[in-house]
Length: 248
Ligand SMILES: CC(C)(COP(=O)(O)OP(=O)(O)OC[C@H]1O[C@@H](n2cnc3c(N)ncnc32)[C@H](O)[C@@H]1OP(=O)(O)O)[C@@H](O)C(=O)NCCC(=O)NCCS
Image (cartoon, rainbow, N blue to C red; front, side):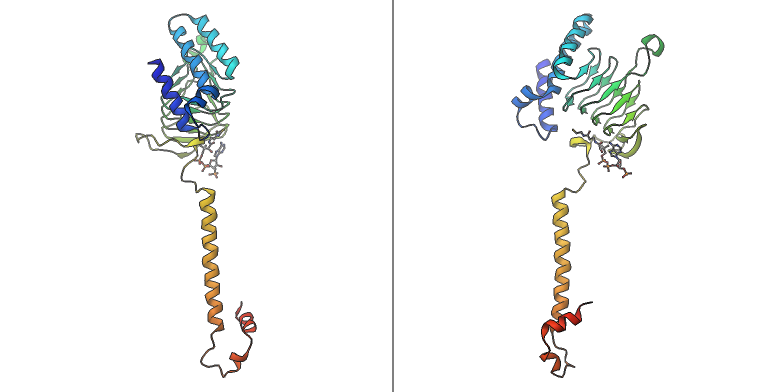
């Protein structure tokens, strides 16, 4: 089971990071993957009551990867943490399957202590959620399935399924998928695939330019043809002068 999870996590990294080239590269060079290894060990110890050992393993993972995941957090399958440095996932945070976190994300608490705030202090993140770099998701709130949290957003209220949230405090600027709909395909950096790519945009510009040049050339061709009313003087007039006259 553990091995299958790890295999899936390597596959998720390969599928979601345009820069990843091979499974070996993921295993050797991805701190997000290493952090998950430490987390899985730490969580295994934590749920068996070896809390200090769990904290220690988690601390070693943090020193080596810059990613701090509390061993008590509950993390679903195929989490991908890209870059990773500065990610903090608190003790009572929960993440569904197929989530993506970029560097500097905090899934943090807002209640000062278990006594004052109850047991749940950190957010619950649904399935297929993308959280942009530096975003802060704070408190025991729910982020719905398929939601996108923009880079540097500060989210302190519930996020509906499929919503796109940006800013501080975060506001909804769009919807990636309607509630209840199948989760959308993963888009690197959360950026919509509908955005025209720059090469297509440049080609479209060139095509527009070519068709306006064509129209101009046929206008000039027409201007060169002698009209039947011409008495021959026009034919004798140099073409360049007639073209110049035809121009607006
Ligand atoms: C939030 C996000 C997912 C939205 O992507 P999108 O659906 O393509 O949205 P758009 O670019 O059309 O932006 C919609 C609006 O939100 C604003 N916006 C987008 N991202 C924003 C952000 N992070 N903070 C503040 N405003 C943001 C846009 O300016 C635009 O505002 P407007 O309608 O007033 O012009 C994306 O911008 C984002 O932040 N992705 C995370 C990227 C990231 O973390 N990269 C790190 C890689 S190392």
